[in-house]
Length: 110
Image (cartoon, rainbow, N blue to C red; front, side, top):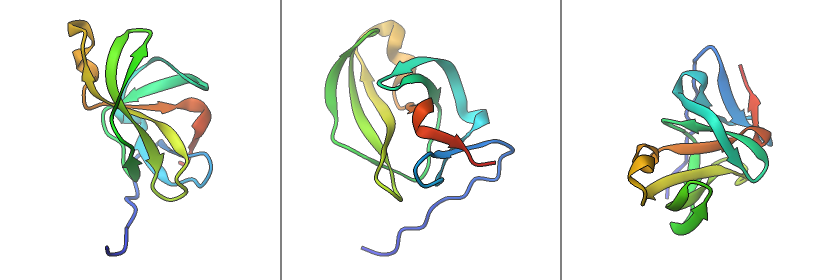
């Protein structure tokens, strides 16, 4: 195992881990702001960087059953949201491969 290098984003508005400020995604990657997580408001992002992914598990959510995995900040290991691996409802398939970041666990880095 070699050194792990973080990706630094250069967008106008960058979201980072609230705990350590590691860059996670930028404002242009937001698909929807109409989500809820354990800590309140959450955003659906197309891409996220500087994360580690947990094991996949099935969860029953308000929009149906999904296979998801928690995502953690690569730097401080804080859980920052989850990734959708599979959606069982046809109307929810657009979430597959996308990421939820919870607003309460984020900060604006730039």
